[in-house]
Image (tube, rainbow, N blue to C red; front, side, top):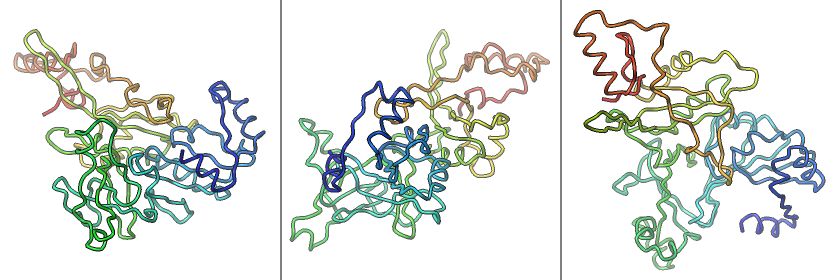
Length: 355
């Protein structure tokens, strides 16, 4: 609906394409050029693989739906002949609530300014306003907030809340009476814009410490040569004859630039240690050819592979137990972590262990 309205309001023509054309590169570009496509609204996961130079009439790119990778941000910023707009907003608030045009002077990614007739609040778990630079959850109010979810009263009550920050004037006018709990983590900046960090669902506890996966992705994606990345907190399910247990470990998936072949896990770890505490460094890194995406053009996290802990032990650095005590400790680790062989120099956390 949003795209249709944009076309009507701008006197543009809306062009639709078929799946057969989208998955045939030559047909796809020919089709877009034949219809003189000047405006594209898509996700970062789609635009990263789009060969922009082949689109002869393209002048505007509108990106939304998921977080923008820092390397893609710098790439788009270099395309000064294009007008690149970042749009943010949940469907429950009539889609776009924040808009930001990428400019050459921009140093990092923000959500930009909120659109007219909408308001935002960055709150903690007690629904209290947070100061500048403090991470909190984003709530949105104002015109456009939906009535709720059809036939789902419990979810509606959980997500659509009375607005405790409604002013007396707003009460008189009957405006801004409710706010929507977005589930998105943000940080308020001094200029009034918001830095998007990721979903609240992606805020996890590792070794008893709360971690925002978006912050880890920001650092990993800034490593030279990495084109795109995703960081997940994965469940490492171990089992013995008597019981089953589950612990979490961090895994970083990354795609490299075509001319970068010498990136290795240790160099990435050393780089990240300069910017993050140890507990936020992924236990494992997996290089993949492409980040999988869903039919909606967003990252498909469920399609990313698990770590095969049974084959992790580094054979070249393996040092066997030297006495009975070391043998018993290695046997305990092997049994606990479901790994066939553990050496005395192996790292418990790298093998998937958790405190």
